[in-house]
Amino acid sequence: MTNSESRKAVDHRDWVEKRFNCSPEKVFGVLQDVIKADVAKYNQLSGKKYHCNMEWNVFQVFPERLQSSGASYGRSVTAKLEGSSVAVSKWNQDTLECELFIGEQKVTMHQASQKIIGPLLFGNG
Image 1 (spheres, rainbow, N blue to C red):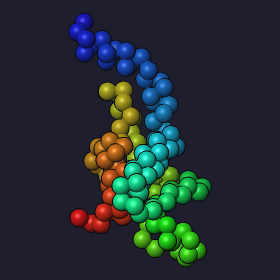
Image 2: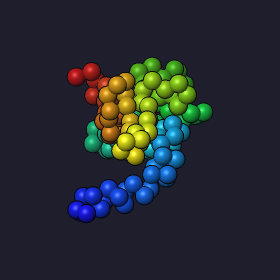
Image 3: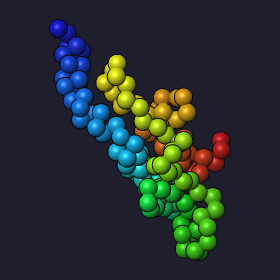
């Protein structure tokens, strides 16, 4: 058995835990953490202030000025756990891995974050 095959065998031992963590709720939580970290990094680098808010399985990112105004969030990003069309996790029975998709495209958590909040933070460019 090669080192690569040995690593795969070890990785596959944890398939039950990986599959358990592939639930929409767990993946949505991890995605929120990635987005929060990306927003914090953007705020640090740009000097701008965007906030993240989580209520009832709805995650929002919006500029600070909209938070203090009490007005609707205006230009913001909202992701919902229920019926989410933004990012969907799927269990791959062949590779024993949890995969994340936006539409039909397989993405990493950071690619999903960029697709979700990139246009808000950087414009459509």
